[in-house]
Image (cartoon, rainbow, N blue to C red; front, side, top):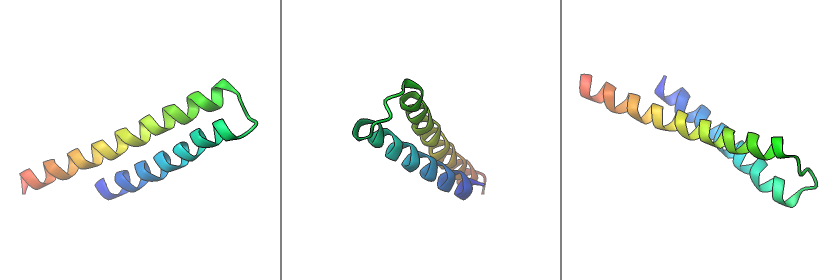
Length: 62
């Protein structure tokens, strides 16, 4: 589960980071696009952090 969360979080974070950068260089200047990319990066970061917490808890239990 932790490997899936880490991979999923990384993919989501990188895609939203790309969207965030494209917001400034592209012609699409909608606020929803900007806030969606920020929200997605936050969710990706949370998924990565949860995967690391699960890994540490699993290590402590065994």
